[in-house]
Image 1 (cartoon, one colour):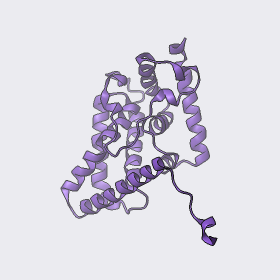
Image 2 (cartoon, rainbow, N blue to C red):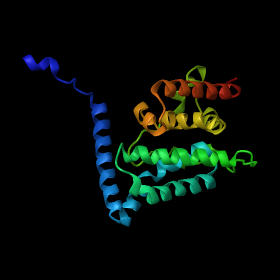
Image 3 (cartoon, one colour):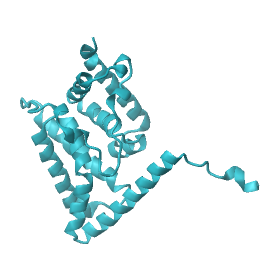
Image 4 (cartoon, one colour):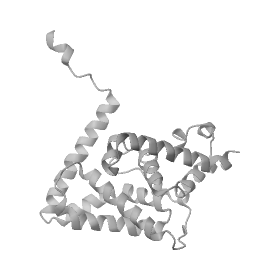
Length: 221
């Protein structure tokens, strides 16, 4: 069997399912983008319906304030609507959307800095930030990714502290924690969203997790 040595290794069922879901999502997005460029308003509503929960979750985790998060999420989709003609299809729509959301949120954080901004609500109180995306993306339990003795601590006390302290990290650290450890994006997806190099991403995510761990130490005593 001369050709068997060159055969690609068979994917495990879980990985195959993820790839199939990603391919289906990308095909759907391409159809919706094509319709939107042709002036189909319903295509835009479908895109909003598909991604609004995950975009709101990303923004809310980073900003820590419901009203601000709602305003920013709305701004993100307005930017998508206005800028769709400039989207040429290089890369995935999913990545382009998340890049807009990340940059819009970071710009708002810069604006709010120094303006005596305080979160009006406790981020852990809202189920919206925990909502699983309609595209089937995973939402990862934070206890499984924050290493050390806190990984075994059970109950709402640590979970609430984690959510609260995420909003106190540096914006770049917040973004990576949310993308990787909350919403479960792959490294490849995060590289495409952020434009970071792989080594930079891994080192920055490592520092973000360490910073979060330090902030959580008082809750673990």
